[in-house]
Length: 375
Image (cartoon, rainbow, N blue to C red; front, side, top):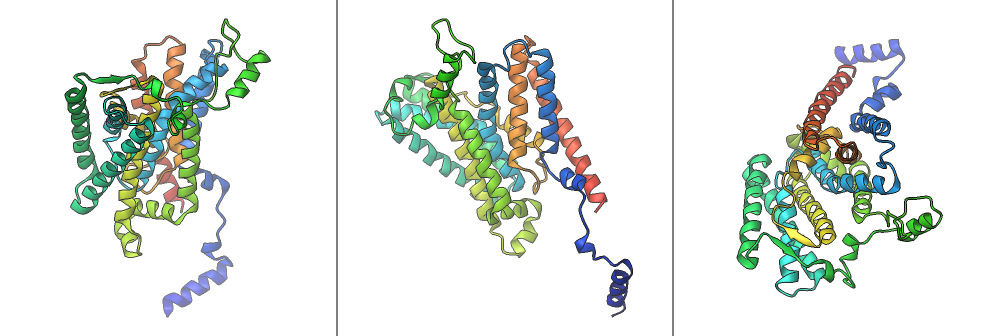
């Protein structure tokens, strides 16, 4: 009773309820996980605008090039970010890319399946593998790092062994001729807004080839997928109950379970999400190149995690955003192509990637600490 009366008295003296305390715009801004990635993206664009502005990097063709690289990474980075927010990791993303490519190529080339059926088969395998990863983590209690590291080796080894057993080599070419008239393949293989680029070329607003056709023919399918997945993932995280469950599962698993959040099902669905995103990545690359390669996707899991961390995801879970992961992917894609346009040794890209990840972790932890201290 004494404590209650003191609380009432305190409120009367101050005339304010702490629950009604206004939060400053700066505090709101600092709470946004993508703040660091946004600043980094702006600095990267300014830097390359100065040092590579006259190289064609920011022409229509050059812009689509670095957006294509960014989008491919962003597709898997967004899924990796959602899983990290849910408190888990998936180190099998890169191997899943190679495995999915072979799941498309071998049935289509060697077994005579229609391409659309081979694509559906690859996605079905992705769902099964994602489910297996999730159920192993949830039911066994093993760290996802260990489970998915094991799956990394299993998938990469199976991809190599199966491909050599059936084809006698490590690459499967010949897919490009199967794309035409396929009811599904165009989703992963056709540039969009081609009419717009044709018109821009006719008006001489973009670069042209010697035959008069535009150098940039349309927006790559990877960019469309990237934008769609960013918007979809952001809507899930910010506007749905499932999004709240993801944050709760990663922030406090025990507490979330106690209030009725189906933590196990949430985590399993997120593992399925990373496997499906890897398959989307594989479909785009395989159909663009016209061939599958057993080594495709090598180390992409680390790049995806790095982009998610640069985008504001905490390694401890419960914090992050899809927009941040998308910005992280744009940073890496821009730098990788910027290095190419400035004739810098591309080996330095890995140095940049590691440095950016370290800086992002330090920055995010610092901001979180400051925000927590001022609450």
